[in-house]
Image (cartoon, rainbow, N blue to C red; front, side):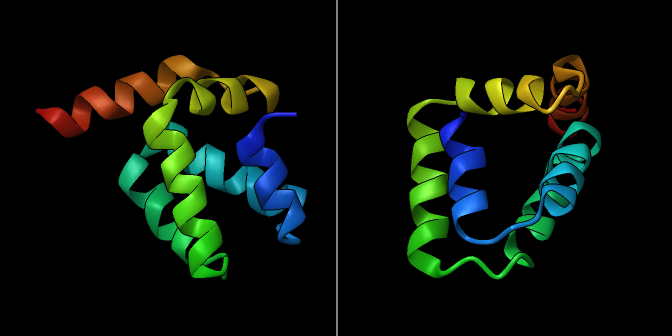
Length: 83
């Protein structure tokens, strides 16, 4: 299992909440950050999660694909933010 998804599940984040988080990520990465902050993860777990993503951004792609979402939408949302 993807380490991002594993960390979320270990912290009792439901499959529905995980799905909503990554759905938000495919539409608006900034909104996904807000959603992530509202999940109530302990600060040290949130920092661990962010560290993993910073060290290995491909983990996001793996998680999105594992959830059956379209990673190209993440790329499109990211490009839109950079404009």
